[in-house]
Amino acid sequence: MTRKKKHFYSRMIWGALLLVGVSIGMAYLLEYAHYFRKNVPENLSQRYVYIPTGASFEQVVQLLYEGGFLLDTTSFVRTARKMRYARAQMRSGRFEIQPGWRNYQLVRHLRGGAQAPVRVVLTDERLLEDVAAKVASFIEPDSAALMAAFTHDSLLASLGVTQATLMTLFIPNTYEFFWNTSPEGFLRRMKREHDRFWQQHDRLAKAKKIGLSPAEVYTLASIVEKETLRKDERPRIAGVYLNRLRQGMLLQADPTVVFATRDFNTPRVLERHLKFDSPYNTYLYKGLPPGPIAMASISSIDAVLNAEVHDYIFFCARGDGSGYHEFAKTLAGHNRNVRKYRENLRRRRLR
Figure 1 (cartoon, rainbow, N blue to C red):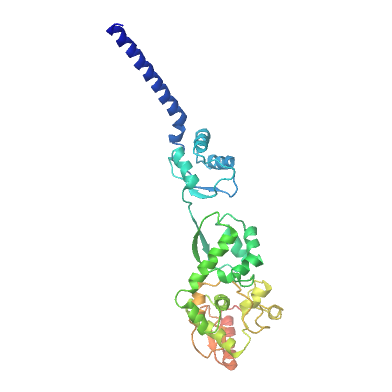
Figure 2 (figure 1 turned 120 degrees about the horizontal axis):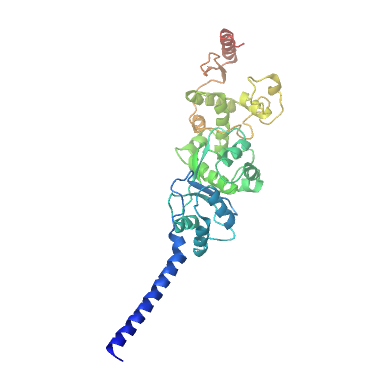
């Protein structure tokens, strides 16, 4: 074979190989182009997708598309299947999506990336139903699921509480949770936060010194919480109730009969409230009620633990609009304060 023919055949072979290589390369690019395609819009109207527990792959795709997180579902589905993201039950949670992400970035994040936590804010809820409704506004379980946990006696027993004392686990604060936290997971986290709270600032030692358990301190704090909005007055009011407890007197706390009757909108306590038979009625039963009458603030809890030492056993609102109270050591002194209260109301034309 002549050199010219050899050169010709060589060029033919190399040309064929190049063609095959280009074809393979093009096929590869076509096959995997969806991986690298930008598929998340640059102008996202929202940044978080919520994938519910037990969602199917098809439901996740629908959530992403309807939420405006996908420009094209076909390329996302192909990428998800290639990257083995698609499963019978998908990973649930709340995930932050970045504008302009490529398919593989989105899939990788949903498959194993960090969840975006939510902030659960607990403040001044009065009833367990209120707590359930508040928490349900932040995490996946609804209020019914939370209430089922709140009334599950064996679960509560494992946490060292009862339905009456469950409120004592809730220390008002802002907490970070994963959105898909279960009701049981929520309660166990609250138990850990409760324990951590009581281990700080010598709170356990202070409770022991005044002869109360943490749950009893919280219960008394919930009463103090409802007696006054003035934080600087709470240690003095706490001192009054501690004096009554030590002397074996009835606490006679108006907020407890309001709680017992659930008449939360009453402008004043009436005779029918005082006679309502309930273990929460401290006009009828000595000692602390079975549990808190509301969520107690940290300032009220610390007011009980650092209660003012004095001899007062009575207090009465001033009636001057200040929100403060007058205190007395004797019934005679208390009756004088009551007369001043009524005079102030008449002067302000409120009576």
